[in-house]
Length: 295
Image 1 (cartoon, one colour):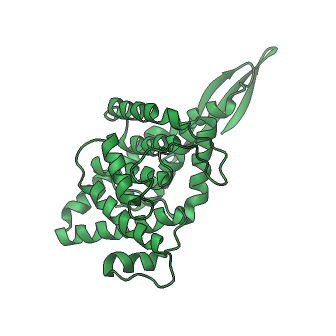
Image 2 (cartoon, helix red, strand yellow):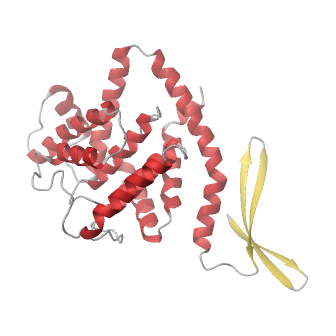
Image 3 (cartoon, rainbow, N blue to C red):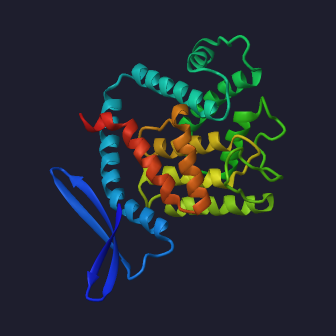
């Protein structure tokens, strides 16, 4: 995306220009900026890119959903169960690893499939691996909408055996994320922000695309940061709860992709520009399920 100058007489006009390929054609999209480059050009650029890409992404996502549904319906029940278990193991490994767990993918599979705990690994890491499976299947079987009691219950399941003093409880102290410049709400603000979050969700959930809703749920929840610990894991569970409820394949944020994921999240939080994170997650989702578009 480039800034173009157009001169008419003595005046210069500025435009944002973006080129994209549609089938065998190269199309150009322009947005008029004015006679001067606006000071919030980065925000305008992100919004322009989002509007250009949104329709294209959503068409891809709907095609992914259709093919995924066809594939899932064709599976015998035992194969569906195996697929779900495979995803759960990868998701449990990556979401915990992002938060500092020392358990490897192979060890995660042994813990969850065979009940074999690795030697020399912290007991809390093993317990939180087992707890995440419990929360995951609780999420899969939950049929109602988001609510505060539900979120508190999931958090209690997640950390109840390792951090019982904070599990299922709204934090009463200020928090910081190591290495991040993002700032989080004061404790006195959290209950109001959670109420507003749930009101927003209930108002918007049928008005926007489910993948967009899932990404926003993750971003808004983790930006409130209502718990002393476990906010990232909870936000990714809530994202997959939304995807699963709308029959879209769930998304695993891989540990190996954590840097770009955290960078997009932090930039969105600092600049208050949700679309930075949304575009990142859209690209990640499309890359993960590209296979369904080639069938």
